[in-house]
Every structure is written in structure tokens, then in C-alpha cells.
Length: 90
Image (cartoon, rainbow, N blue to C red):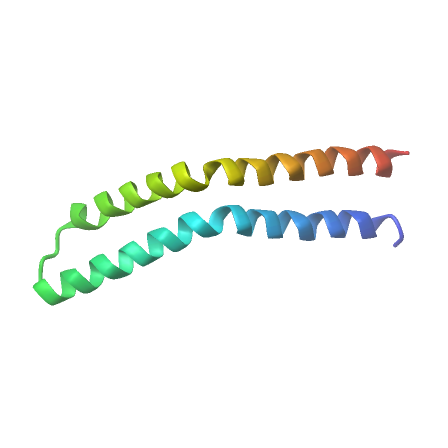
């Protein structure tokens, strides 16, 4: 049981890191989808590309703005994983 505690802590940290990395992109796509959906419902325009193009543009913008912090978060987690593996292995 004692050997599984660091692995469970690492799995917990992995889930938090995944959520923090994915959240800005998902929230931006959700917000734009909601706004475009409301506009489509109000104007009765049901065009598929009308939802896809703004989402694509906003997701690209979010990745440009927050990409470096996302990558830093992932690299810090990878360094932590390798350090923890070295400690567990001994």
C-alpha cells in the first residue's frame, strides 16, 4: 500500500495538469459555440461552416496566447514525473 501512494499522487497531479491545459481551449470553444448558436437560433441561419470557422479562429488565438504557459505546465509535470520515477525505482 505504501508504494502505491506516490503513484496515486502522480495520477492525481496528471489529471489536474490535463484539466489546466485543456480548460482554456475548451472554454473558449464552448463560449464561441454558445454565442454562434444563439445567433443562429435568432436568425434561423443553419450553416455548418458558420460554427466551425469562428471556433477554429478562437481556438488558434487561445493557443497563441496561452500556448507557452500550457507548454511550461506540461514540461514541469514531465520533469516531476521523471524525478518521481527515479525516487520510486530506488
